[in-house]
Length: 253
Image 1 (cartoon, rainbow, N blue to C red):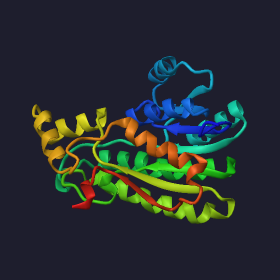
Image 2: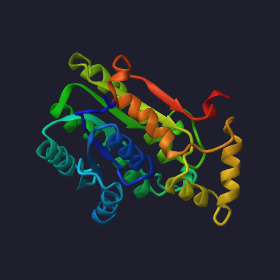
Image 3: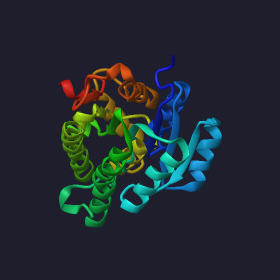
């Protein structure tokens, strides 16, 4: 038996590095997967790359309730049920001190990273099978503070509150909810943060970040996806309401 045999999973932020790594592992482990993201062309390209008959995709803005309802309904229409929800979509905003942070960008980060997470749980839970699993992507920034990333840090802390509330409310149905908190990951998002921190000196910023990580490097997307797979599987049936840190000991110092 594979870890996700006969399970149906939704992955938001599906075309990002962690979303794609998770989709790859989920499909390998027997799941049917609905990949959700904003852009149809990139979703189509991702589906062609994954090349699996058990994969479908849906275009949606996770911050809009009507579009969240749509991806949930499309999943049930396509696959008949929902067992796993990888609530993963998120954006980084810009790198600026609080006193200079643009209000419109702050609002967009909160809309995607907080409201999008909340809406996802709100509309997935009624359709999810008892015994299901919700995994929410936060960050090491959800347990620490980082200068000039105020919107992002705020949003990633808020995810913990949504996760813990979900875990308590869903427990009577044996539905689990946990958050994952990666250190910096080799991804487009980190390239954006590095460049935003010091234009033209992204490589040097990466070295500075890596110096704060005892293991001395960024995480790879597949390393995060392996943890997500464990939390999605029945191997983690008694794990719920937890903060799962995967940060190379960055937060241990």
